[in-house]
Length: 162
Image: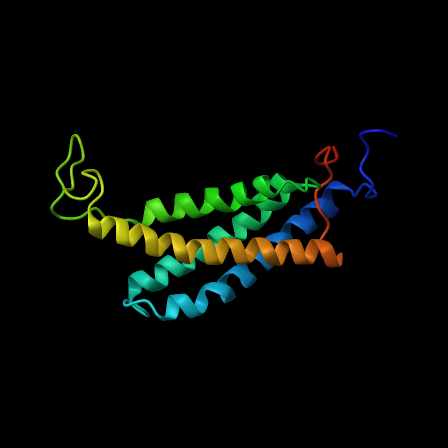
């Protein structure tokens, strides 16, 4: 029976439930793990801070589903890190505020890189650290749940048709 999953096949409804569990585990655990860092932010409890972290909880929810679909039964560390990295990079870049000194077409912001100034680099580093903590922590929580049998990995051959 080459190419078959060692895990018994679930129905589509059961797979959806597992994806929902992955989303919930990711959102709760990722949010809890990054909370101490978020509370240390200079803008803690501002409207922008609240919106950014509400959005992060939604991103973590979606990450849980995507991570379950991406890693399936694959043990590739690179695949797992790539899934985390993709979410870290997209959240971090989207959160950077362009400095008022920048000019457009083409974007020029000054030293040290021309395209990114010191302020933008510092913002990106901060967002990346927080995002890595959140998404990395969510991935660890998902892997823990997989290993404990609380959550089932998606079979290597994908979702059942129903």
